[in-house]
Length: 162
Ligand SMILES: [Zn+2]
Image (cartoon, rainbow, N blue to C red; front, side, top):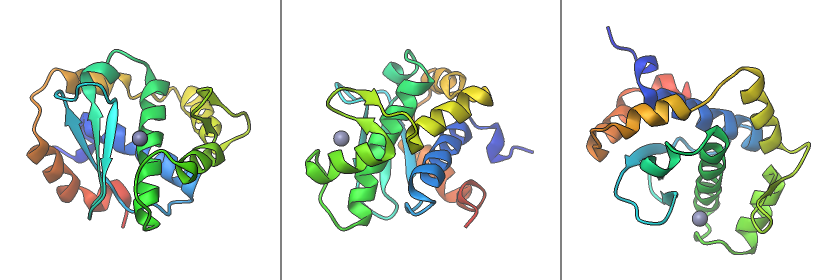
């Protein structure tokens, strides 16, 4: 029997849940995560919709570390926060303010101490939780947007508990 826990994707959704719980008190709408090996420069993108879709640049992220992944995921989640608020995307004042609120200073690329994001980082260190092994496994392919969307729909209940 193959549960969703066996998929490396589940580890990425764990991080999404962690950030959503700690930084937004669970208020963000469930979001599909799509793995890409065709992004040129961006580390991630976020598209509005139901569900919102976050695409991740896997070849690059798989060569980084867990905090690079967590930072990129948080950045894209702030875009989905904008969409949920009925705002456009972009990196304007509302984006920077929300990033600062959760603890990331985009300008200096510093993480603020005693912030929700910092707390997530500490939790991950404490519980030795890293998405890196999952990212490296995913990087081996194959890449299929369709399969990733199916995973989201198939395991929606278990992933988000609602
Ligand atoms: Zn952005």
